[in-house]
Image (cartoon, rainbow, N blue to C red; front, top):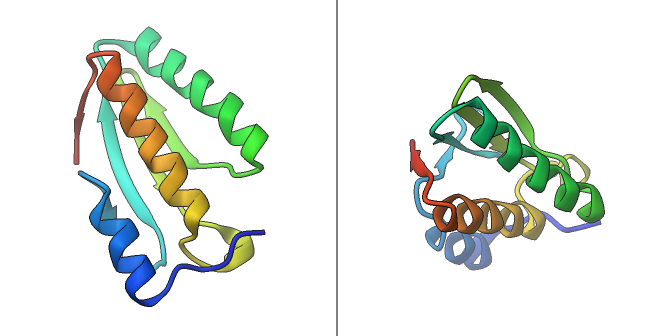
Length: 104
């Protein structure tokens, strides 16, 4: 189990994430990824799902055609943890390497 991020550790971790925003009313972060088409979006989700399962950390997400809306929070910690930052960083890296565009 990961502990909840607080104080300066939280500020530092969130400062390193580009395009992620705080979810209103929750201790969570969110981002929308936009891909060329459904196939790219679903392929990305599949790659992330395999890693998320190994991490025992599962994103909240919704996919419509080429758009993927993601919310990350750690339910066991009742808020943001290192697991969320790790998964967000990985998602950004994979989306960027594949030439996919991301937007808030």
